[in-house]
Amino acid sequence: MKSLVPMAAAAFVSVAMAPAVAQSNPPPGKSLAASAGILASPTKNQTPEQQAKDETECYDWSKKETGYDPMAPAAPAAPAQAAQPEQSAARGARAKGAVKGAAAGAVIGEVADNDASKGAEVGAAAGVLAGGRQARKAKAEQQKQAQAQTAASADEAKAAQQKLADTFKNGMSVCLEAREYAVK
Image (cartoon, rainbow, N blue to C red; front, top):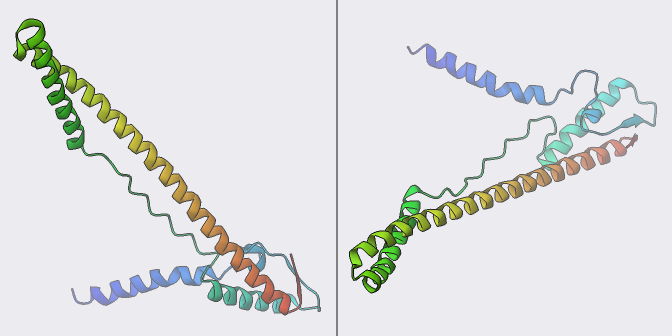
């Protein structure tokens, strides 16, 4: 059993290290600059090997300075925790409706038929229905607000990701321009 622990640790380390190696390699047929959305062409007759070296160094520099790697998969956004109304809240609304309805029904029943208990029963039943309707409306409103909040959070995350990407591209472009490449 002891021999499995080092093997498991080695497997974990090799899996954990794999993305770091893959991140610095551009897709086949693309330079690092092109994969980052930058067009760079040599202005001082740099060789393709020199350009690849310069692009790698500028890519790494910009990644270090910005903390952003365009080739690393974006971290998935954490799902927003929607405020879900509990069932007890729905029961509470029905119970409140029943109490209010019973009170009103008792008064009406006493006045109309001299039978407060029958009026209270009818009023309670009507109150339960009204309370249930009110609980459903509140739940629908909470769901609508949660959806709007989730959409706003997603938009903010997307804007923040785009800002990081733009900052990375600007940094890499400046680095390549300093090494005498025409950058667009």
